[in-house]
Length: 342
Image (tube, rainbow, N blue to C red; front, top):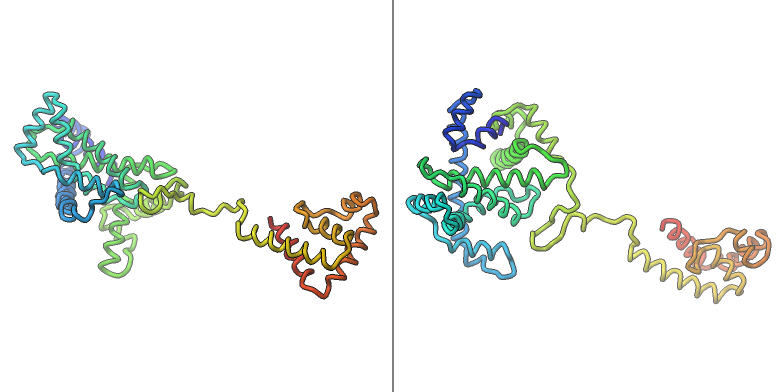
């Protein structure tokens, strides 16, 4: 959708605004064309409302807030054109109850439109909530004298509220609403082309089908490759998991590695006690860090025992010679590597 169409859409149902746009060079044909687009989308949305009624029985579950919400709103009867006009007149007169009733009767329309934007970065319940905000604006601004259906008018407000929320909240870098809408249309066109032809469309085919330029398609596709927030919900909305929960903390201690280190340390200490003298065992414990502290240098160990670094080296060599024919020496090297990588 172009920026011009966004401006036209903002004033779509105001005769005064149409005159203002004509003065700015925007033709009535542009208004009619955009109105047709909204009508087509609204007709599709009304068809999908049946989905809520059709499987209401399968969606009754007190454990799932979305299904519970579907069940509740599907019980509200749809309004006739005469009932819409009557309620709109009462809303205009300031009657709060009429405002609530007109909104409640169109909550299913919000859900059917919100369904199209699942997977765009916001939880489904958030999409519905934002759509309901748009619905309330439509209730407040609806002019029953124009003669069009309320659902036709409300569809644009609902869609705009959802798109704006996706643009503002689902991206770490804010993207204009009309670019976000183009990205959605590109993804939809790619899915349809793949389903029909078995391959993805070329840039030229996308540009022709969406009535835009190849350059705009390229820019939109680059923009869609955004950095995801670590707070992005993952899976079902009511599970509470976010993207950050699934990213490995490279600085955290691995439970498996830590357990292996403790078992290896215990096994080595047992072997050293059986094969070496107390002094040899202590020197090797200090040099390899088997006492739970970082490995010490020859000078450090010499200071502890009050001997020279050369004498420490000799004691260490004598102790390692006693372990030469066993697997303990190999395990000592494994333990040293674990400490170095920690």
